Amino acid sequence: MDINTLAWGQFFTLSIIAIALGMDAFSLGLGLGMRKPTRSKAILISIFIAIFHIFMPLIGIWIGQYLSLYFHHIAVIIGGALLCLLGLQMFWSSIQDREDTLPFSDRTIIGIMLIAFSVSLDSLSAGLSLGFFATDPMLTVFLCGLAGGIMSWFGLYFGRLMGSWIGKYGEVFGGFVLITLGVQFIW
Image (tube, rainbow, N blue to C red; front, side, top):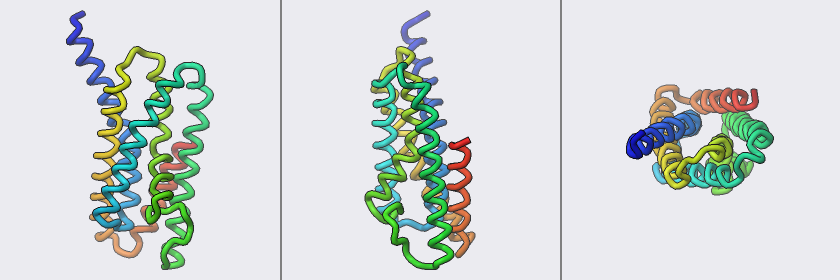
């Protein structure tokens, strides 16, 4: 086989993986977008997700084969639990009809970091799996970061549009989306 064919094959395969990992960021963005974050907040959330989608697979690749089977299940469960907590918090704040007082919110930097971390845990698992193969780590993390950032931004944008259509119940629906995504991670 030609070296260019191998390079394009790896690029295509890694692109598909990055898009698949970015789908969680898109889904999360839909849920969070219904809360109608400001443009600067949406950009900040997308940047943090992109950063975590870069470093999590890189860490996973570095850890490699030894911990991949063990850590995969823990990472998915933690990510799912964090998304469920965020969804429950959204339900709670919509019922209370007041601003969040808990730190796990898209309204604080720590909350945004937790959100980005939770949606990027599957990238860590993917990185662990990719540690088995001779993939280009820089290409992998570039594609994962790009896909995660762009897809989360699109999710936030479309979630914001859907939120204006849904009205007051948008946050409840967003909480439902996050809880559903979290439960899927756990199972």
